[in-house]
Image 1 (cartoon, rainbow, N blue to C red):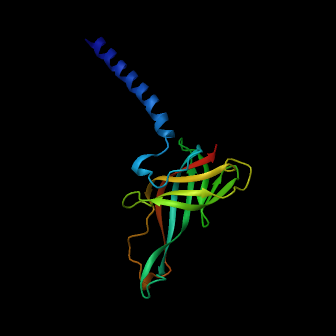
Image 2 (tube, rainbow, N blue to C red):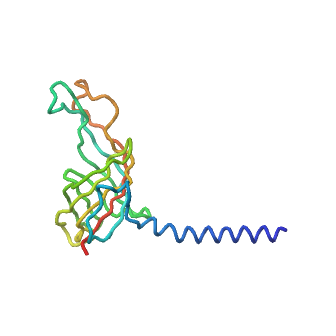
Image 3 (cartoon, rainbow, N blue to C red):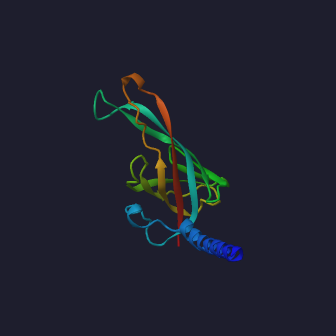
Length: 184
């Protein structure tokens, strides 16, 4: 009886291990599709070359609204995030303005936003960026497009922005996947 129970547990563990080994590599390298990526898909002829996770802070400043006298809003100042690979190893950073992705090898790329798509309440939008020519001869050299996906947090503060705190800067935490593509 004990032996059959042990064999069953080993068989279940082996099956679970096999399923994880098959499913995880595909999930980790899959290009986002469907409703979540609608509007921010990269054009045909692009190949995923680097996947990173950005974790850091976005800074906002309480400012007077340009189009409405006597009204105030939180204005985006810029990000400051560490980029890691899927294993958690630091491979670079993302900062701005201007929005700049810098690899640990010193190569950098900036870009122009082409599109955004909603990412759910409390999350900054998904984004598609057309890369400018990179500086440096490293990993960022061939980047043509960048997708920001799987965003978490990062939206403007919910605290009031008024004349009393005009000029106040506040940082909010965020996380996002940054997917880098090259032309093929």
